[in-house]
Amino acid sequence: MTVKETARRFPQSTIGRAYRVAEQAHAGQKRLSGDPYFTHPLAIAEILSSWHLDEASIAAGLLHDVVEDTKITREELLKEFGPEVMFLVDGVTKLSRVKYRGTEAQVENLRKMILALSQDLRVLFVKLADRMHNMRTLKALPPQKQKRIALETDEIYAPLAHRLGMQSIAGELHDLAFPFLYPKEDRWLKSTAAAHYESRLGYLKRIAPQIEETLNRHGITPLSVDFRAKRYASLYQKLKRYDMNIERIYDLVALRIIVSDVTTCYAALGAIHQTWRPLPGRIKDYIAMPKPNGYRSLHTTIIGPEQKFVEIQIRTKEMHEENENGIAAHWLYEQRKSGGVIPKSPKQLTEEVKWVQQLRRWQEKYQGGNVDSGEFLESMKIDFLKDRIFAITPHGDIIILPAGATPVDFAYHIHSEIGDTCVGAKVNDRFVPLSYELQSGEMVEILTQKNKKPSQDWLKFVRTGIARDHIKAAAKAKRHALADKRAPIRTELKVIIEDRPGLSKNIAVVIARSHMNIVSRELVVTGKQTPPIERLVIGTNDKTKIEKLIGKIKKLPGVRDAGYELLPSE
Ligand code: MN
Image 1 (tube, protein in one colour):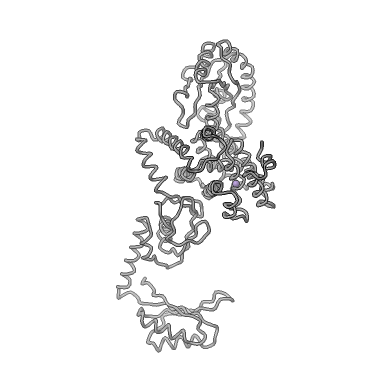
Image 2 (cartoon, rainbow, N blue to C red; image 1 turned 180 degrees about the horizontal axis):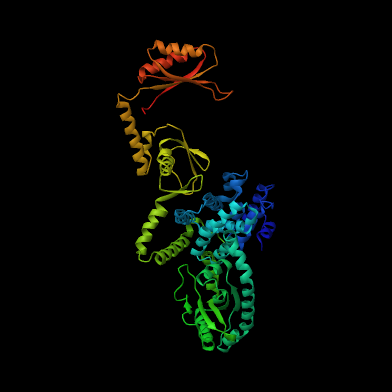
């Protein structure tokens, strides 16, 4: 049943309600393609449903853009759908804030962050479905955006799906990105490869009955025999290693045999090898030795009828499903085992998270070579999952900080000057105190003011050495400045006034009578609605004297307010 049908038949179910809320919230909104906006969340929900994910994930797919792009608030959503769906929507929103701009250093951080944020794997599934649909409709976007999103898909999301064993999703994402990243190669490939695909497929269809007959003769009845065409993007990668000679790609189209159990896999391989000579060095036992991402299958290339090479893949149904859908398939099995219908709470998903970590450990071992993986993972877990948070700049860059870090730490990590002149902070567009404890996935914007100096109070809450050092250094500089007698000693007065004849002169007279001299003065007018401000620099730093002077100035008719600031020495 499609999500649409489910929503119509069960209007009071979570999916039914999510469907209605999203449809109404996005009413009138259009995508760049001209389609009604709701087609997008609905397509995502259908994708998630085709992956057999649970109600909460499908609801989150329907609602994933509602908080960011419509009038509906987080609070309303939470009230209507509860914490589980809210948790998933929040997770997807966080992931969407990160933007990959193709810098080498960003890649690993981004993948780590995505894994860390996806404590609940369903967040990642919704995000992958979102990306899948955005890629399928990428044509509607301006070229600049197409490139960026295709690159992000190709270098971040597809490898992540691959790492989690989701072959078919990874493959489709790579294929969808390919024409946008390599338009010329894509045209060449499609014109060249099409005929080859055609003739290979024709050949395999001719010989498939012979293969099946051979199996039958050995008492094996395969569940299915079909054909797997190599994907364009991966064909291109392979062609580069084979002098772009398509004749040398034996697995352009492969024969795929599904049997009932592992023993039969080996029996089938034996039967085939008895009939057709295998090509040396091409027999791969990924059942005994799975690939790092969990892929399992037997592969062999035989010299088939008409003396042509044929790649044959043999596997069980379960292996096939796991090869295609990886961790999503695993997630589904676990859920079925635990009784099925009840959606798991985020905490109950720790098993899956362990699985991710295991995958990651394999990955590290294979790529890093000699690292003690146990110890390495331990340090990685502490560093990256427990004691670290990932905060995001408004440009989508990731700043990695220790847990408990504040906007001030964040500011100093971007640039010491931003830290020094920081006066306020916004987290996800809301003002927060500078002592606010940042959480992973939050977007942080720092407000600065020129000539501002760091406050010593910040030392009470900052968490990073870099912030602490700068704050202390600034305090030291200030003390030196005050102690330095040769430094110019000045105070700036700010007097908010009414436009009143003679007032400026009266202020000057009061200052002169207090035996102080005016170094410079200017009248600042910012707009018709705001009163003008007199700024006067006075040649003293005697606080008591200045405060007395301010008192006198405030009493002058036409003065609305007055204040002062000791100027730092240059
Ligand atoms: Mn979306």
